[in-house]
Each structure stands twice: as structure tokens, then as C-alpha cells.
Image (tube, rainbow, N blue to C red):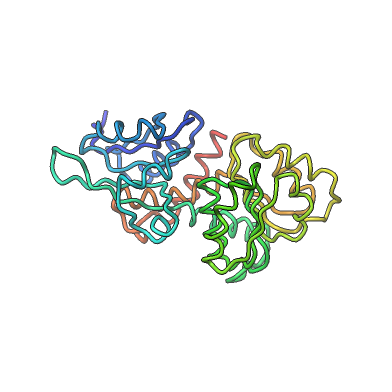
Length: 297
């Protein structure tokens, strides 16, 4: 059995559902990194510092999910545009100074790229031409850390107006200044108002956890087929498809699940953690990972 010399993991709470170990370990095998291993650990914002403090130089990095994407920020240096701009990171890469002592931690946000690629590739797969700038309107459902990355992803698609729908609209107003820095106009609405506006949305991203958008899906059931034309990314991948994805397709839109976002945010994570140039990654890595995901979903 090969000795494990390099470790990485995904942290969050809850975490037992995570597909990240499947993705990263599949990538390691495809890259010939047989002494690398990736697993998951249940960690919250109160225990994150202690967990990192117990790591040794075998550890190359961490993936961060709910509720740690903001909690990690004081512990490292934002090292790409989106981690610095948004104050949210899903990737921590360790640089050990010696065999003792704490590592330097570089922080990256790869969620923005993951959202962009999940949406644009879904459009291409459906046979639609993806313009350099989609423009038009975007809808974000939810107001947490992933919603922050969704707004940034909208900016890369040149969305001009964003609507933020949240269970507690007063909390969602905190995201409005971010959208405005990207030149987008902003509306904030309650979740039960989503059916009133979806027909005019080019891009929709639901960032709510599993089943939390089911009531929104039920509200859309009264709409007529053909009433939506846009592309929906639901970041949930269990259940698959979600109720929201099912009704969205029935109404005429394109729907893509969270496993695609997870795949495309993981590929740059893998490059950062393994110290591999993006151009040196296997050209078939995305299809190899997708096949592995299909086997477990």
C-alpha cells in the first residue's frame, strides 16, 4: 500500500454528504498522484482554528464549505481576485516554513469560476450560443456566502440587473452594495415573490440548502409551460434533480445541478493544492471526474 505523503480535506458542518472526496481522489489518480489522499471532516467556525492548529506538513490544503467560507478569512492571505474582493474563500493552500510551526495560508475563491462555467457549459450543452456577455437580468435565491459568489459570477457574464430573493429580505440588502460595485442595479424581494419575476430572468442561481427551495418550486407550478427561458443553477446535488430544477425544465428553461458547479470549482482547487499549472492538468480531467460523480449520484 502506498504511503500517504500529502493530505487535503473538505471542512464544514454538515459534511457527510460532500462529494469533494470523490472529486479530488479521482483527480489524484488521474494525475498519477498516488501518495495523495483527500477526506472530509465536520468542523464549524468555532473549531476551525483548533483543527488547523493540529495539522502537520503533510497537509497541502483545505476546501471550505458552509459555514467556513468567511470564518477562514482572518487566518490567511486572500490570494486571488475574488477572495480579496468578496471576503469569502472556499480554498486554503498551506505553505509550510519548516517541519514545526504554523503554515502560511493562501486563500482562494474558486466558486465564482465554478458558477460561471456550470452555467455557460449547460447553455452550450443545450445547443444555445453563449455570448461573451449575457447581459439582461439575473436572480439569486439566498443571501449567504455562495450568494456573494453568485453575484460576482453575474458580473463576469455582464448581467446588468440582479434581483436577490431571500427568506429574510432585510438580510439580503447587505449584498446590494456588492452588486452595485459591479455596475448592476439591484432589487431585493421575498422568496414568495419569485414566481412574479422569473419569466424575465436570463440566469438564476439558487444557493439555498437541500429542500429549502421546495416552496419556491411549488410557487412556480402555477406558471404556464414556456413561461421561462433562462438557465437555472441549483447548487444542491442531493436530491438530484431538485424540485426547483424539475419545475424549471417543465416551464421551458435549462436547469443544471450543483454537481457541475462543484466540479468546476474543484479543478482550480486541485491545481492550487497540488502546485500544478492549470495548463498541465490532464485535458480529460473534467470528464473523468464527471464520470466518477455519475457513479455515486
